[in-house]
Amino acid sequence: MCALVSPVVGSVADPAGAQTDPFDAEIERARGELESAQADAHAAANRLEETRAKSAEVEARVTEVQAGIADLAVKIPVLRAHAEELRQVLRERAAAIYSSGGPAAVYGPLSVAPSLEHARRKILADAAARHDDNMVTELDNTAAQLDAAEQQLQAEQADLAKQQAELAQLQAQLESQQAEVDQRVAAANAALERARVLGALRARGEPVMGPTVLSGAQMASWIRAKGYKPRLQTSVEDLANIYVEEGNAEGLRGDLAFAQSVVETGGFASSPDNNYAGLGWCDSCANGTRFPTPRDGVRAQVQHLKNYADSTSRAAGLAHAPSPYWYSADPVVAARKFDTFFAKGWAPTWSDMGHGNWATDKAYSGKVLRVYADMVAFAHTGSV
Image (tube, rainbow, N blue to C red):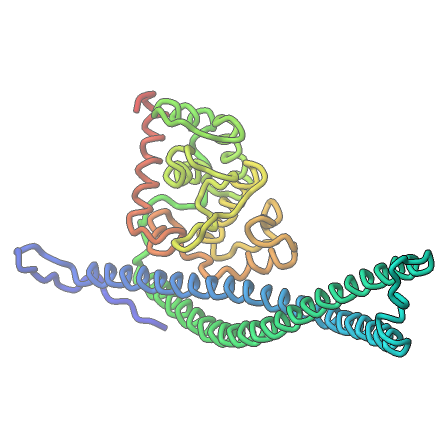
């Protein structure tokens, strides 16, 4: 049981002469510790995901190399057998020629006026010589293929050893990083609990969960009044209505999620593959997550926001199954990933966003809230 610091302790003067409440200072310190702990946990989780991705790449390479080695293991004996067969045929032909008196025996005695028989023998001998030359060429080619295959096998085996060593190193690194993530998450949860006990999370501003206030038409009108140039697969009115529908389905404020997407996409000017919230993007990522339809992109965003905002959220309680494009195409895996999200409940208000929660930018929440305030003001006054 943690003891609360009494809020009625005496105030102390700061150097400028202003009075500072020690309890307020402790609350601010708790908030700072919480944000720092959450940022550390997110950074550790990002490192873990990068290592997992690298490990998956190396595993794929190992599988590819093993398949190549298996193909060579079949190819090399066939080439060796074919080369030996060609050599045997050439040895037998050479023995036959020399046992009959050498090449002269094929052509017969020299004659100033060659007979028909002599001409026939010469034609047959020439044909046999050409056949032998072709067989020698085929043997040379087969031997060259065999040599190349054996060299490739040696290179593939060396590559396999290298990839397996790297994979072992990555697996050890994964174990270490997973332990670090667990430690960081535990520290962040402890800081979160301390902040709650102190009341440091009270009056934090706009909650993430709750009813959507603005209509789709109001949000779409604001986009047009601001002069944004959306590049979407659907109309901005349709997209705004999807935010209202998906938000209401999960008990989440769809209009604030819409405001978040305005910040993320520059007024929907850049939202490739229906990704409106930067899902899957990171400092070292070449691409974000792809969603086949606008609704799929909004649904994944809303579900992820709910996971951040509601510590009690579970896949079984969602209005729709966890997004197969964000969590996993396997429904069982998707549900497990949703339920075990390490930052579940870390951002119940929009002021908790940033410093790792959704974005690393410490000013992230302020940007979203300013957009939202502008949308609300426009809905009431009709001007921007």
